Amino acid sequence: MEAAGSAARNRRLSRRQRAKSFVQFFCYRSVHGLGPNVGVNVLDLSETGIRMLVCAPLKEKEEVLIELLGAGQRKPVKLHATVCWVVATADGGHCVGASFQRRLRYADLQQLV
Image 1 (cartoon, one colour):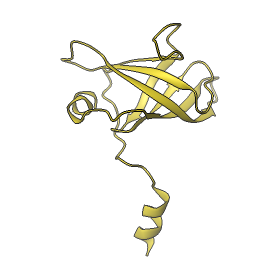
Image 2 (spheres, helix red, strand yellow):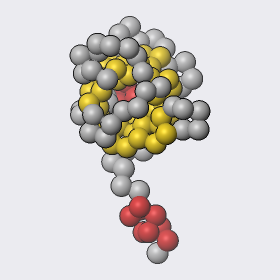
Image 3 (cartoon, one colour):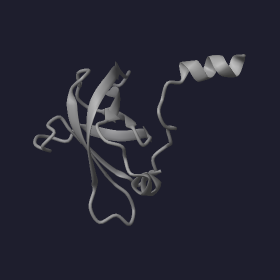
């Protein structure tokens, strides 16, 4: 019974995984990649979304451009994402959860986690 209750609480479409420490990460408030990079760090990734730290407040339902570059990749993976939730952190930053508008390819995910 407990397993069914925990499964009901976890509504994610895919499993979260910790990003490798050397992954380069950029987050832009414009879906065109214009403006400053507000990304600080990737906390975890899945095929369908990202949890990240940013230095500027984002709004729920705001669209952002995420760029991720892992070891051995020539070009960054660019994904449009929609902000799902935002929580302020003690140091003045913001923890953000966002869902990708298209799935991250499995091969790209393996390079990044």
